[in-house]
Structures are given as structure tokens and as C-alpha cells.
Length: 79
Image (cartoon, rainbow, N blue to C red; front, top):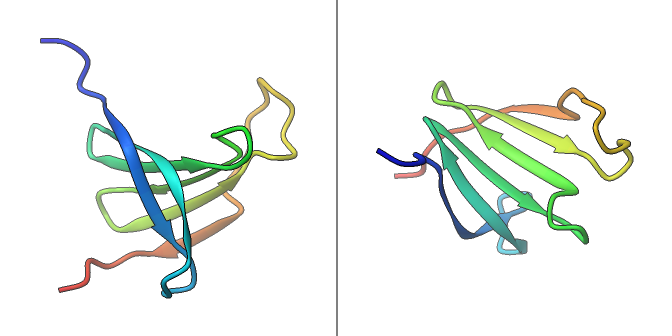
């Protein structure tokens, strides 16, 4: 069947406004993931199927180490 990962470019907006960054976007299973930063994956935002948003800052994490989310949000779809 092949790899179910869907990856392309995306855009993430900050603070509910119109300012943001171009990102790498992936949908893995039911999770949506945006990665950006000087090294392309310094920062990550993941939205889980239940609407939980997880923000990760990998800019100070040593390669190979794990980290916990820097912030957790409740996300809603605008209508």
C-alpha cells in the first residue's frame, strides 16, 4: 500500500493574526504536523485528533535526545 505519510509545504500563523512562517507540513495517521526554523525542524506544532495542540522547541535539544512539549493548546476548526 505504500507509506501513508503525506508531506508538503504549509503555513503556520502566530497569535491568531496574519503573521507566520512557511513550514514543512505532514499528515501522519490522524496527526497534523508543521515543522519550521533555521534548520527546518527547530520548531514543531502537532495537532492530535482530539484537538490537542503540542508545541515543541527543538532548537536547544541535543540531537538524539527527546523533549516534552513547551506548550499545550486546545485547537478548534474555524467555520
